[in-house]
Image (cartoon, rainbow, N blue to C red):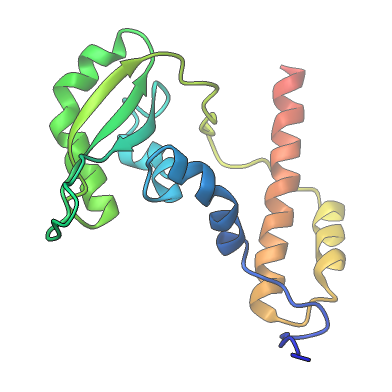
Length: 176
């Protein structure tokens, strides 16, 4: 019988690795090599196109059987809302360069723009996050106090504070 090795009483796994495993089948189905492309699209596309575009898939060209060699770049299909497509078409070479820089290799050589709904983008905050009341900070600190690993405790504390700040921001937005 094999034994599982754990790091402590409760073995925690990094959430990034878990998220990647969960997203991998869906992302691969759409032809995207990395889920990070979707998750960091706002930074890649820039403020002009972050809210009106979304990468849909990468279409890889067919390579005849038996032929191996250098990777052939694909076509990035980008969904674009409304008239922004005209502006995106003019900026396509820059976006191709940004995507390839992000991926770290010449993965995309052109962009195909498909007009359609992009969905509800995650709104950017206008200013700093709202102030968290002291009792909520203490509640978060007490919740993570039992975690023995320092890095994990700090990460969970930061996550807890962000959850509280987002809840406060949402409540403030609903009041407006």
